[in-house]
Length: 275
Image (cartoon, rainbow, N blue to C red):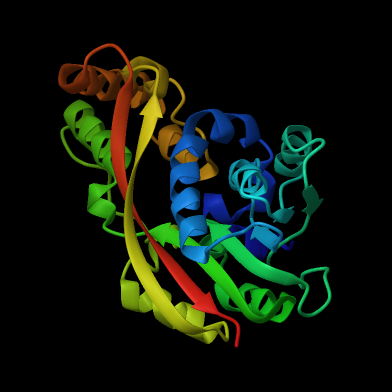
């Protein structure tokens, strides 16, 4: 990709950076996204015997859940490390995994799949609409798509607590930056319109809650760089990083103790039909 294009991408949109985060994402954040993915699959309906495409599948948490529900899963992700880990975890199961950039044409014929899922994946693309149109193409008529994205970002407790820790250390919150790509569709109407732009019909939007859980506040504070955007944010703290991580852990321990902790988050799931 030309350097001029790379310069305009946010960290989470830079495919190459995700290769460095497969293990950390699985260990730290997948527990949260899995809970949202499970609710998305509930909305898709029974998956037994279906052919399901998981686009931007990450390390495979959702794909493993789908096979447990009886689906035959094809999982695409642009990160070679994510795909390698997915293949390891899915060995012997009804999972096919392949490195595929969702910004390009999907390497499957028309009407291949009965259902499709993208959990915090397609929504971070610079332009999600071509990818959604490809999902529309590879779904059979009547096939259903579920897209998971954030809503109510003020109730994403991990982010709120991290901002509070920065303010505690620096005396001011982090300066506002560009809207993160994954927060472009927090409004239910915006998500519904995105699905319509991809060619889908009958969009319904469901708000869902889940928790990010960790063994302790301090273990979570030590593993906050689980995604490219978080790594960039923490790097921007420079010499204050250690103090911010300590402040994050101390405040969380004050509220929830030194054992397991849980941080709330709110997402929305858009489900639509390929007519």
